[in-house]
Image (cartoon, rainbow, N blue to C red; front, top):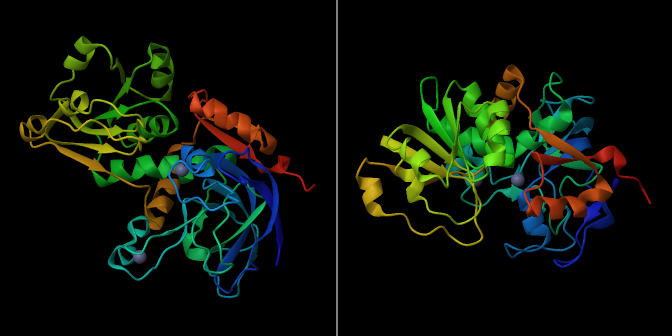
Length: 351
Ligand SMILES: [Zn+2]
Ligand SMILES: [Zn+2]
């Protein structure tokens, strides 16, 4: 079996460090990928530190993977050696439940297989993610990546991109809609770019006055400082849709009241402790909806990548070397990143 190298957490309270392990040889249906770049998602940190519980150690995080195909199994029809490809948050699912059949693998009734810390059906134990030099994945969970775009900037599309694209598409955001985006981090900055490319008028809500210029540069038509009640009031009953990316508990009513009749606010940020319950009156007063959304299915992820290639959209990134990952986690905790760290896997060397 091919040897792999990577960075792993050996325990919840330990820094990530160099780790050697094995990947499977490609089965008939598999694609083997040499990883060029891997984005750094907040989920990586949560799971490496077992903050959600259930992490099996050693844990090799990483689910924003781009690279080149190095080998394919003999039944692989979608990819050939040398193709540029991506892998996101899932590497498999049951493929037979109603949700999988409808292309909603992320909502698989039997649970999808996570790219890391998922149950590894081939090797036993858990799956190891993208903080490594290679990965073997079933072709149906591999995405085509356009060579038109900067590859390092594409990596975060595999999680941050699809997490924001899917709800914007599902709730039918289009030209003429007024769309609110709450928070300007890894998810929020993608939401601004994608909603703008879909033709919406984009209103970015932030607590930080120092993010105004950047929000406008990224495509926001309006920037509202959410602590300023007068500014908030001016947007009451006006927005068709709000994508709320904030992962800290906050007052949802402040945003629900900005929705017009039949408007929806969708949550994609996951706070460690729940938000205070919103007031029912604000929902019934304008038949408003409060919803949630999780990444996106494989077909939709491909659609998102194609959409981003067509519109020249990538993530704004800060490139790091593999051995800078622990420092990057500390900076991520302080939101000190514009807007996503991406690991240059060429910096990962055999010891
Ligand atoms: Zn992620
Ligand atoms: Zn399923």
